[in-house]
Length: 286
Ligand SMILES: [Zn+2]
Ligand SMILES: [Zn+2]
Image 1 (cartoon, helix red, strand yellow):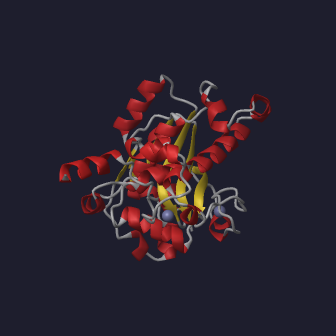
Image 2 (tube, rainbow, N blue to C red; image 1 turned 90 degrees about the vertical axis):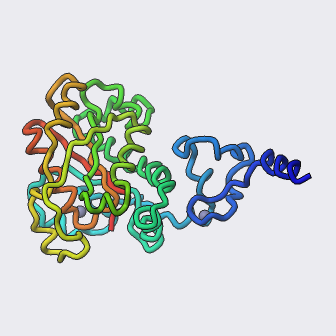
Image 3 (tube, protein in one colour; image 1 turned 90 degrees about the horizontal axis):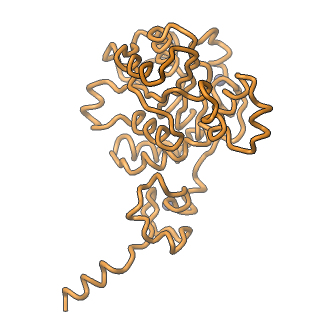
């Protein structure tokens, strides 16, 4: 008898649970009951996140600073002069709820959230790709296409993103955490937008924990914390079959002052020494 009950339980589809709060997700349709068997990245946001958690997402839908993608006025960007980083776009404002989500992923190790975060990054990828279309003077052609920026630019030879890469983690942090969240997010973008992923950077110093540094110290740091990987760079060039112009997407979880992504962009400029556009995609903008 017990065996029969076990079998019945196995045959019954498990209810869709929100991957953020763990409550049943009534928002998801019954046809998605089998989603336990589908890779998370193939699902839509409302199929994995319940309505009340969806409402907590602090999407950035209006941008006031065109350089860093912030929704408010931005003293850091006005102070910063020339930079190797062309622009940043972020998915969400770093609200209390978003801090808690990131905390669960990064410090409590709930890696299922990487696919959710990766999915949430796609509107930001779309926005920065639209800017790349404008930069290259292709907007009229694109508008006629009726396609999304990513879908259209992918078909234009030599004008799309050549690589997606991520901010490297220090060895110490990697040992502590067991994964690099920026690398996982970059892998999600790579899969969704069909951009090859390359390890193009490494850390040169194992510095003090970022949050323990003063704001001024973070702003005045140079690119020497990071270095470009010649091995990764050459692998990318061999695969692309040309050296310039190159367009690279750099991924990190949070943009605070921007010192990390700016330092990484400088390191990429040093290793690439050429016609290079580096844009960063970060999950949250504080
Ligand atoms: Zn929920
Ligand atoms: Zn800014």
